[in-house]
Length: 136
Ligand SMILES: Nc1ncnc2c1ncn2[C@@H]1O[C@H](COP(=O)(O)OP(=O)(O)OP(=O)(O)O)[C@@H](O)[C@H]1O
Ligand SMILES: [Mg+2]
Image 1 (cartoon, rainbow, N blue to C red):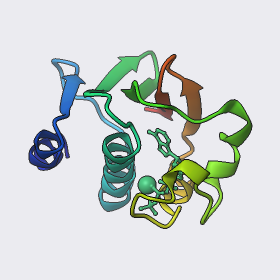
Image 2 (tube, protein in one colour):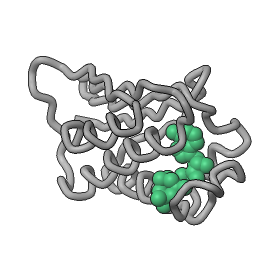
Image 3 (spheres, rainbow, N blue to C red):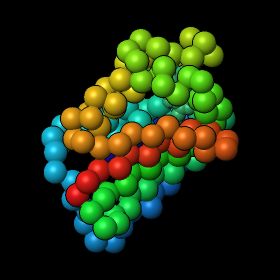
Image 4 (spheres, protein in one colour):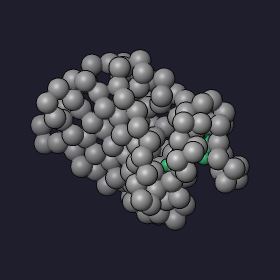
């Protein structure tokens, strides 16, 4: 997914910085849906992060868990809106000028739930950090 999005990121003057484990990491689930989850999060980090250049993507395996993190240093999502953006069609006012329908994070939430994973939207100070914790 990272290779797929690198050209688009480059065209926008952004970089996808990856921190992936040296050994392979496994999560049991639906490959296509997990791909869509990643695609939506990468697209969001590229589209909604303003002038911030770097998107950091990491995967960490700890005892019994796989943690996927995507972090940008754009404007982030105010704490009061972090639950609302998971609802379908909800977009922050400032995003009205960007393309999209407010469906991506609802899909991400649905796919995470389907996989029994925990989804957290956290202040990256500045920016948004999305953390998804899978049981492995
Ligand atoms: N990385 C981010 N930084 C800042 N705001 C974000 C970020 N990701 C999402 N948002 C905010 O959350 C809203 C909802 O995101 P969501 O992915 O559901 O919809 P969208 O990106 O606007 O459209 P779609 O995903 O349907 O193309 C966005 O419109 C934006 O306001
Ligand atoms: Mg989106």
